[in-house]
Length: 171
Image (cartoon, rainbow, N blue to C red; front, side, top):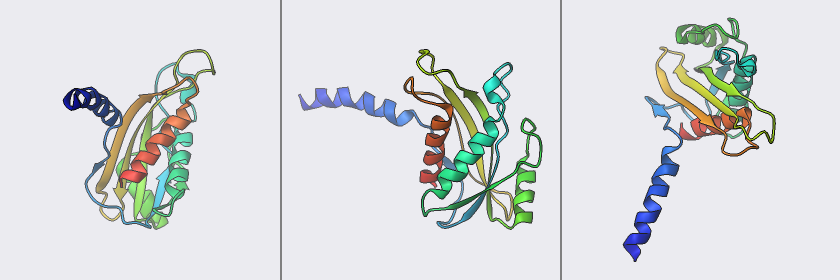
């Protein structure tokens, strides 16, 4: 009986663990570090009106989440290029170096779909983000995920907040 219960629980455990991809870490970000967060690039989904401003929203969420605990301090930085233009990691590092930061977060919004409540369609969001060490441009960590809301009350901003918390807590 004990084994049959384990066989029922194991697949549920695997599915729940597999739902959020891991943050790939190639180094450590020291506790207490001040991290610059550059507004992300807006999503580029053709015909999707919600994409406009999505990068600014996502960057703000990451800055807020990273500053919400004593683990890190995040400082939002304005994007030096247009909201739909690519900001290379080298350019992000150069901007952060000029401003005096040791780490910088650079990223893109890959999807941002916001529907009216109770329409029985699901909101969704997707991001790709890299934490870069300014000293040498090394990618210290990266994360990428596209995710649909788990309920009809989920929002793209809420989904991105969950992702930002996952990234912060994984460092």
